[in-house]
Length: 403
Image (cartoon, rainbow, N blue to C red):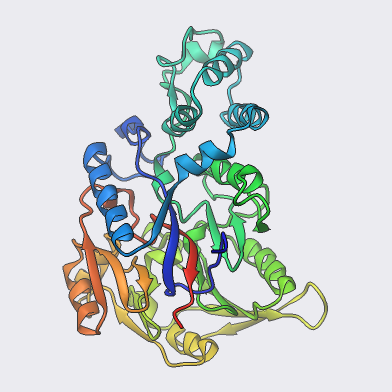
């Protein structure tokens, strides 16, 4: 099996990267929720049980599940790479005191490799750092508890990177608090023996933000990308030029989303569930501005065509077959808004017509069943507090052609 192959949202899923929620959720406090992009604090033990149940469903459907902690640990197994990781992590933690930097280096160097990965993900409290004491004027003034911030959004592995075809996009996250998440993916795709030779279409050092929840690989020639509050149009142009240069990719459909938390990413308002069916937020079913991007006549240029039609009509045109958008929550606007907020439109396809969903979105799930979709519902009382569903929690690495 190839290491990466993603040329569809719905071909049979064979390998996926996930992150089991860890102590980073225990480092969330009400005072810092807005900065950490959370609305509430998940209960860690229950979130882990729910995530384990999600993984069980994947494995029951013959999907190989690989964990971010494991791949990252394997990537930095070499002592030289491990040292590079520690130095880069410290640099990205923005510690402004040389004594604290020295203590942090000693502490991280003392940890076993897998524990090192987990600790850096969880966040490092001042009380946790051996020998920490107030060394600077800032440390006397501020009561902030962390030397290095937690990364509670890490269980949404879709965002910081995504596979496209046989390559990878390592994304520059919009918010500084999430930008460090890509350090693990970066080291995996630089140093892990299975992934180090993968072609890169985007890198975390780019200047424009791009997030994986906005990228949907619809076929081996068509990709949809959301212009959202977290993905900038400049990034889409950069990615489009590189994909067109690669060959095979012919069309990018850029969908202009409202800059609202409810429309955070494209996959929070629409996902594909079968060859001909997408589930979408009701506001996306009506006319929404979008743009078709094609290669320009001259090398490394683009041709951009504004569209005012319904998005389903444009998808049908470029996918070469009629597609239908069914409304998350049905035709009831209140139910649609509520279930979309709880990730009713955020499904993960195991194969065409077979999807993992959150059990709480009962109306949407019944509608999917009525359209012949096989629905596997998982509990999400705690996972959903992070505002992400099964699609957000998964980074598919390999999908097998269905025929």
